[in-house]
Image (cartoon, rainbow, N blue to C red):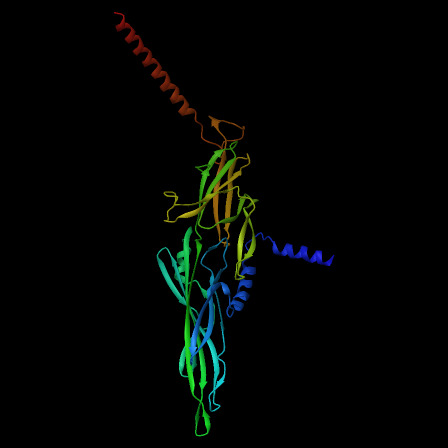
Length: 402
């Protein structure tokens, strides 16, 4: 019984669904995982080589790869992220031996030093960042060793991502090395003693890796489709907005004069990749407002030169009360960036002279101006055209039958 309860709890945790993107959870997990990956060997990214030490070939193996970007939502980033690198090594020891005088040739020290350089590119902008290094001296020779395996996306690239369409690609490339250093005491016999004779041997293995993710900006644009002129007939209650966004929207909130309507398009869960790095994944909840993913520039209705990859059609119903209505729309993307739009919409009745549809007093906020003068003018024009037309027909018939 206890086993079943444990399995049920494990499944629930495994398939936990979050209403909001669980950034704190994922970032915390990934920072802990990054520490483990800082000195870990993975066969999937391993390269083999050997180093010859005094006639003996020693096998050396190193591994280095981009383990992941944290955090990611649906393989997308908004620029606030770090690159996590996996690095590790395996190396045989030099076997101790003696010469004919009994003097040993033995390994004193074996170390591996890493260098990590990450290149970033988006829309022609390029930047490179080195991991944090410390300098270590081995028998008079300096080596730079990476003390961190996490690299932040540089600010210039992050700024470019802020305006990325959502279909733009951030390309990340790793160039790295693992340098294997052996310090050997190749002692020799001298005047009855074995004299220390240190020698340094080194071999470097190079690594490269790359990863691409979508770059999502923070820009959003609302466009009121209906009513176009911010006023409508009070019995025509349909309201409609188009929302252009550079990031996927997961939550839309409509405030109708204090009445809140919440549209939740996605929930979220977490997955892990082959290196154990957690990523956030959206789960469709209510995609009724989502039109599609494309690249559009809503010119000329925008005043900025931005492309948008996500389009949403937001519809709502107004009530049939007359007058000025205050609406506000809030759209939150999967990176928790919220944009708000406020609208004043007038619900009006028709009138003719002093008469109104509902019988209520005619005011500017509640009533369209009377169309009576325009109708009288149209009738007059129609009558005049009718008289002139009749005269023309009579003249035509008269001349025809002469």
